[in-house]
Image (cartoon, rainbow, N blue to C red; front, side):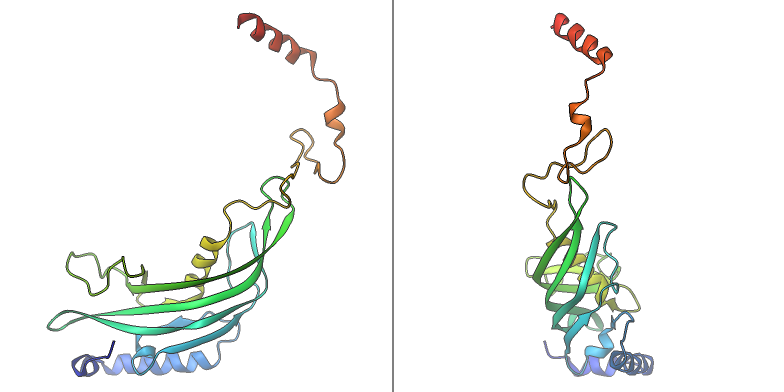
Length: 215
């Protein structure tokens, strides 16, 4: 969507300073997080071709990224006109990611390698901008809506959410995983558990017989 001259005139000296700071930080991202601001996107979209290193993003306690996560896409500015002098600066983020992850088996807790790739197309609005009702140029039917903080959109936060959504809800090391012994905690895939051959407690047998008699 082209940016109107009225909107361009609205950009203040403070915004331009913020833009220059953003371009400087873009050139030396290194191991730091990447912040995307609307001011960066006024002149042209931001092309993304990143290799996010292992450890840059914290997922959950049982999910770990293995090696770099490749990310290719673009961020662009979409200006919503909600009134004669009311503008909303949306950030549209479209990207493809590809990488490898390690998740814990849901039964035996052994690490499982999970190759993962996916695409997303998201719109981020300034937080609290939709607190009041009104007509919007972009609807939720067109794309998913998120919100960014006053400082800008943190790329890593958006990627983290999409990776977690793309991962399977339940991971198994193998379909017939035997899991852990409920008594001693041993991995029953590695070796037979001695607990399986132990005689059961006679007190439990008595209770079982009592329950059967009442039935």
